[in-house]
Amino acid sequence: MLNVTPDNKLKRLLVVGDRVLIKPKGPSERTSSGLYLPPTVQEKEQVQSGYVVKVGPGYPIPAAVDDEPWRETEEKVKYMPLQAQEGDLAIYLQRNAIELDYEGVPYVIVPQQSILLLERADDLFD
Image 1 (cartoon, rainbow, N blue to C red):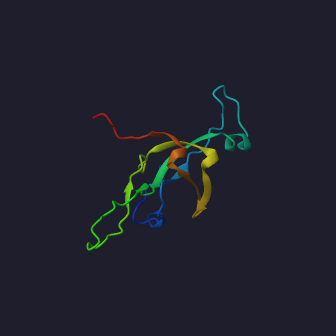
Image 2: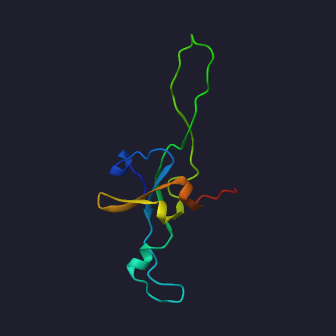
Image 3: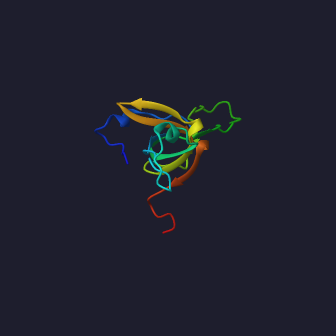
């Protein structure tokens, strides 16, 4: 798992909207029966997994309409946060992922709607 620390350059990245930056896990080289898969087959799988590195602010919520024109209007945008958190293991649809390399490390950017499942290390029911 890769964490965002003050001494690395991932701290400078800002993920926009409802998107999630994921570091993909290495695909399995074998099937459950022990057969080796070539890299072209591994990359074509529809469902992939990886660790969430950064998340965007979420879905923007429209500002409340104020009927009092003399008040100063604040144009602060509010967001509904995403379910994904840094450090989660995400299982996502590959077809909606955008692949990129940053500092020589492969990452994918995925909209939250493409994430099928999140595995969180913290115990949710305690």
